[in-house]
Image (cartoon, rainbow, N blue to C red; front, side, top):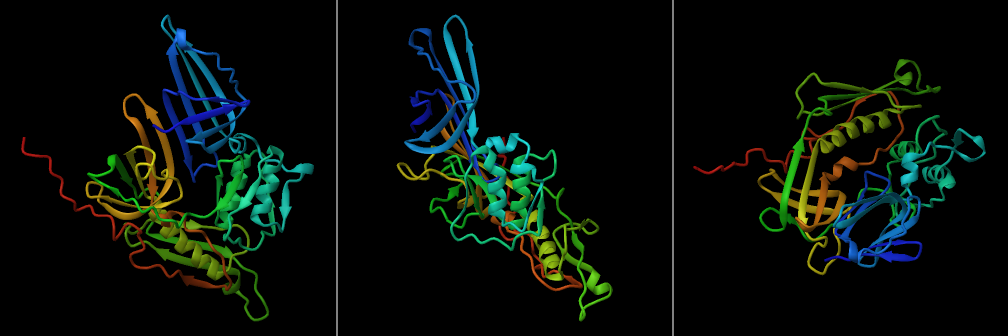
Length: 375
């Protein structure tokens, strides 16, 4: 069984009866939920308080660095139970309002990593741009909206810049992109999958995406084509008539509008499918590496109708008396995290979207035959 260690004030605590540790790329902060329950005669004092700095390690590797959020105690005539929950330092970004030093409300011509660093400064959270990740040119101005949380502001600039803000497990924030590293161990029905579920929806998808914006003219390019920018993209896998009009902020070029329309079609299609898989143990292979978020893994499940490469978006490591040691993997298609890009040009046009722009079209089989038996 993996060794889970909570360290608070230099003291290491182990012996947890139930464990939940969650890490992912869709939330800036990892979180933990640890529970110890013992007979009165064996219970030792655990001086852990909300607000205490802490780390959580799995087999000696620190995966969460942050604070205790809650201490919950219960008892009866036979036993005493203590539950400790907490999050990474980035949890403060989720809770707290965004504010800049010096009572400023906007940043001018600053790259995304600098903007995120300025927002994180008051919380003592370091920010790092992952090696090999490039950023688009700085925004002319990036305003902080009064009342929005720090993470909402961070998420806004990161979406504009095509990066993901994720916890690095060491108390900092990493600006990265969806992973390209492949896990050699596949998730295979009938082999290492304990249980799985999938949901697919068209509620957030449309048959036509129209991006409309404005672009200033020039001496050589003027009139309506210069001032009005319109681009369309189609998703032929959605029933006709469902239209979404998108109006981007700021100046928009034709190329940028075409790319945005194509991005909306492909990304919304990829995000329409969500898969959850539970496996025994926390390691890809006995004695091997942990299952980790932001890695690619092959999923082969006839019952779900899926044989495709998936991106692990979240991992929940669990220990309980009923199931033992398990890991629950949240999976999405990698296309769901395609970064948005910009470009030049102006006028009207159609985005170059393949006829089968649906990321599920080749790997998603609804014709799998269910066998409920004869009895």
